Structure formats: structure tokens, C-alpha cells
Image (cartoon, rainbow, N blue to C red; front, top):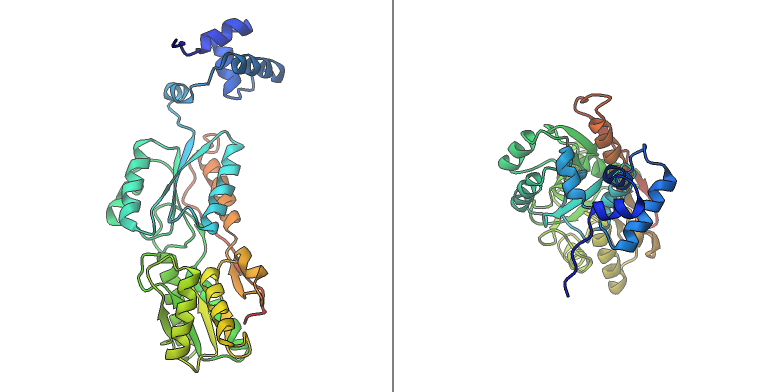
Length: 337
């Protein structure tokens, strides 16, 4: 036997209130007391009623969600950023609609088009490099656009991030100050991970600016690079550049793979070769030795992005101009380098 779905009117009749009061109770309207709200929700639960937010949003012309694109859903960095963003937006009654591009700007273009069709309140994208069509869609979206995890020279609108190239300059400075000049870099052998490519370019520029040889570059495969590929790349580095005093890896996962390969080969870290990473992953702090790394504060990126979006959407304050919020990264752990 098929039962008809319970409606808002059914809840209103059972609670002896108006349909409008039920609607306001589910939308956290301040005109409804907490006691009345709690009673209405208990009755709705008993009846099996589920509030239709889509219909309510159609009436108010608001979707109450923010679209977000990330390169990967199994990367702890992006998970932390999206988690913090979601938590902060939830306090304002907003949700996140997430899509992942697989480190492919063409796929990001498809995602952005699909997400914009759902008319989000704002859209957050990872990185500052996109296809021309993606950029055009975002410029003409008519909603707040935030680029994260980067500091693009020509931002679309708002930016919350840091310079990936500058992090490498900071790491090079650290290693040089410790007396190392023959420094290598392990990263992807394509530019699909634009942030990883920026780290490689930052490494090269930093080495050249100090009059040092920047040719010790090892491509470990198509991004994202795994721990296994990091181990293989370290083996290649030892074969191709046996004089290397240190190696900077594009991520802590790659650095951990390199570290374990050194242990397999009996290469002492940091006495024979120093190893540095990027990301301040949990694995960097529990490996032995701990990995010298850059902490880009991914959760802070998420909370700052949410705060910016809520500020922009606050009609009382009016539309604010483009904001450029730079996240201060820092170097931590010093056992492996």
C-alpha cells in the first residue's frame, strides 16, 4: 500500500499553528520561539515529514549553497579546507556542493558550468589557473567568486591563499643557511597540478637567484604523486645526481616515500642527504626522522573563505570590492633537513 507524503499543512494542523509558522520554524526564523520550533520539529519527525528546502528556496530566490571545486577528494589538504569551509557556512544555514576535477582544468570547466546551472550563492575554485572558458563563465557568473590555494597575478575576483613559489624560496633559504648548495627537487612531470608546478618554478627561481645550480629536477610521474613514486624518484635522484646534499619534495607524501627509500638503501637522513616536503601532513610529524615541511594552514584557508563569502553576501554591508587575503605559511619540523 502506497502512502501519500506528509505536507507542511499536515504538520501545521497537528501542531495547531499556521503553515507559515512551520516554514519559519524550519528556516530558523527568529520570529518563532525555540519552544514552538522544538514542538513543531518533534511533530514533523513523528509524522515523517521532511522539509522541502528546494521549494522554499525557489520562493525566496535563494539556494543557500556555495559551490566548491577541488582537484581531489582524497587529499587531506583539500578535505581540511572544505571541512572548515562547510563548518563555518553551516553556522549561517548554508551548505556546500562539492565537485572534484582530478587535477584537470578541462574537467574543472565542465564542473563549473554544471555548478553554475544550479545557481549557487557563491563559487569557490582551487588555484588561479583555468581555461579561458572557465574564466569567462566565472567573470560573468554574477555571484562572488573566490580562488583559493594560490595568489594569482590576475584574479577573477576574491583570493584566499598563498604563493606556492614563495614557499619554495623559503625552503631553499632554510637549506642554504644550513650550508647546503647542491639541492634537488622532486615533483610531477606535467603541469596539471598547477600548484605543484608553481613550487617547481619557485624552486628553480630561488636557486638561480642565489647563483646555484637548479638543474637537479626529477619528474616522478603525472600528479598527484604517490609515496611509491616518491621512493622511486629518490632512487633516480641518487643515480642521476649522487652529489645532491638535499632534496625538496612537492609534498610530504613524496618526501615520506623518499625517506623510506633512503632507509632501505642505508642512506642516512639528514647526514647523507636532507629531505624536505610540503603540507605538514600528519605523516610528516610521526615519521622517523620527522619531515621538515611547509605548513600552508588548509583549515585557515577554509574558514577565511567562508567568512569572506558571508561578508560579501551580507546585503546590509553592500557588495565589497575584490579581496586578497594572504595566508601566512610557516616552516616546521627540522629533523630530516
